[in-house]
Amino acid sequence: MQKLAIQGGNSLRGDVRISGAKNAALPIMCASLLSADTLHLSNVPDLHDVVTMRKLLVQMGVNIVVREGELSLHGAQIDKLEAPYDMVKTMRASVLVLGPLIARFGEARVSLPGGCAIGSRPVDQHIKGLQAMGAIISIEHGYIHAQVPQGGKLKGARIFFDIVSVTGTENLMMAATLAKGSTVLENAAREPEVVDLAHCLIAMGAKIAGAGSDTITITGVEKLHGASHRIMPDRIESGTFLVAAAATQGNIVLHDTRADILDTILEKLIEAGAHIRVGKDEIALSMQVALKSVNLRTAPYPAFPTDMQAQFMTLNTIAEGSAMMVETIFENRFMHVQELRRLGAQIDIEGNTALVRGTPKLEGATVMATDLRASASLVIAGLVAEGETIIDRIYHLDRGYERIEAKLSQLGANIRRIK
Ligand code: EPZ
Image 1 (cartoon, rainbow, N blue to C red):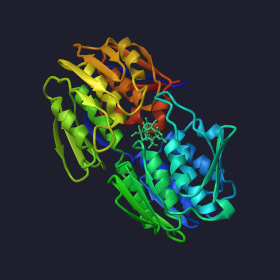
Image 2 (cartoon, protein in one colour):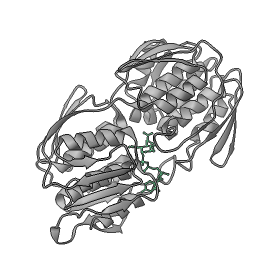
Image 3 (cartoon, helix red, strand yellow):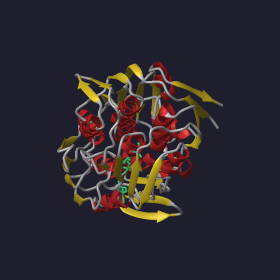
Image 4 (tube, protein in one colour):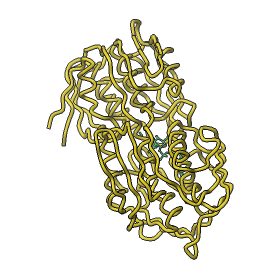
């Protein structure tokens, strides 16, 4: 089990390059199942989840050529329409093969993704939408078995999401690209990663309008062709580094990022006292004043992202004042709280609300990562805590952050990976 050892106290200074977005790369890799041609992807992040998705697609018959930061996916010889439990259980995003498989082949068997640390995370909206498009779906032995009767095609439908779902929107948008007729997704997710997927699908010949709004219209086409697509920058990695710089009274510049999809994060950082300057694909942050507590409430894009809640909680633990933090997306996304308390943080939980009282400092200790973004909040805490912090189970971190300790070391952090 690998660990991270961090000596706190260094301010982050310098330049860091932001990698491609995990939550855009994963659905876009699944889009390769929709065509018999080759999909060329660039700016692909080197992450554990991307490797897992690659293995899942290869075992279905997708031919994948890997180069540094690039993937060429060729979906001509798909011979297995199944996503097995042992792969799905390690990565819920595997459910994103369901829509493409049933759209192109009329059949799919995908293991029901189990819950995970942050919540039960059902996929009922994915299933409801596919049924509305004519798929017959049964749940047998923990697998979703989806079929289109008489080997026919999905039919366009008007689908209303009961709850905003990012991968639900992505799954149904992909399924609709090859359906007969038009599909309208109402109450769709507006996340930038949904828009990036739509751009890739349009480059493959799909007809999609409204991506980025809550109503997306997809007009089915006979088939999709190959394309080249550059994965958008990771807005959550960007936000994570900005919070780390603010927490350590640092001064950094992010490169290859985008400020226009980080509005609420930048606004909260400015409210906390940070000075922010944005360029075409750069964001500079410097912190010269004492941190001020910021209240926040997570909600679907364009509101404050749940994937940044844990990182901002760390900021609030050492800020002046108290902050109310409300998590409205997942029912159990406060796993980092008990770990932050071990470092001396003052946090009270009441249901989905955390009250964080700022303390002058945190003290290094051994803590355990529980999920991807909780791990990031513990790394930030280690950077500011007095003394050494050891973080265990950092495989969670490697799922979503490319070479995080190398990038942080480059910015002056005293951090190393220990076996
Ligand atoms: C995506 O997960 C992201 N993952 C998550 O990022 C992110 O936290 C989440 O969206 C919210 O922004 C990827 O894109 C691969 P949802 P997803 O469907 O699609 C409920 C990270 O750290 N729901 O938008 O699984 C669900 O339980 C990860 O990178 C249903 O009830 O999330 C949750 O409460 C963590 N039924 C809410 O909706 C459904 O059919 C939002 O879930 C689907 C979802």
